[in-house]
Amino acid sequence: MTPWAGSSSTPSLKGVNLVRTFGDGTARRAALQKVSMDLFPGQIVLLMGPSGSGKSTLLAILSGLLEPDTGQVLADDDGVLRDVWQMNGKEREHYRRKHTGFIFQGYNLFPALTARQQLEIVLKWGEGVSSGDARRRADDMLDKLGLAKNKHKKPAQLSGGEKQRVAIGRALVKNPSFMFADEPTSALDWENGQKVIELLRDAAHQRGASVLCVSHDHRILPFVDVYYHLDDGHLERRALPVE
Image (tube, rainbow, N blue to C red; front, top):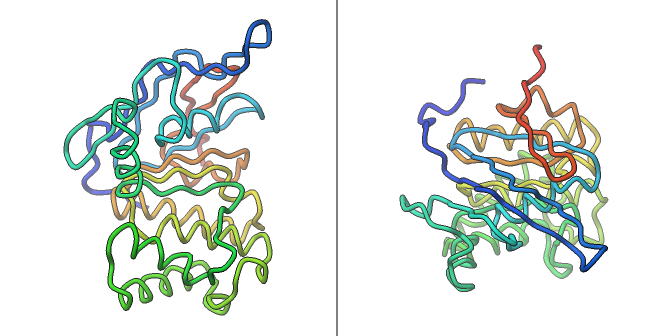
């Protein structure tokens, strides 16, 4: 697939010299050690590494969910590059709601809402979309994810893989500028996992989003533009395998 035509040499998000430690005293451990990463519009980036290497920590910091000990996260906020961690709490919440989409390993679905309503509420609350337009966009996304027949079901009535796809649809439906995905294929068979990765790639290549995907799944490699490896708090950019 051809990358996004508006691809730019200017990053849409820059993580600069990020440091994050956990624990106290002799138990203190550095999860990130002066890590820097640039994300560009129109690219899907894969971050891999062993369990406990700091991948989810880096994703959380870049997405505005976890504050670093030191370092900066500079993100495009309506054409202005701002340090996410210099925003106050209300500004940062507004920024996340307006510009970012998240795919978590734990689904984080509302138990009382149907699959369709999970997506509708994001559009109504985050974008002020009308009820009719929110329903249309929610149904279209659920259909792309093979969930059209499940749109009236609540999370307790769905399998783990179906819940994961609803969570993915909820993140994608508002067409965010930044997509952050933590193990998006972990609960899916490869047929559905491939659908999800293709949707994430489309968000980058067709709509110009900056997509960061954390995963252990090497089958994702042919679908991405940039590949990073994180180990023991140190980040390394690696060449993609030749097809």
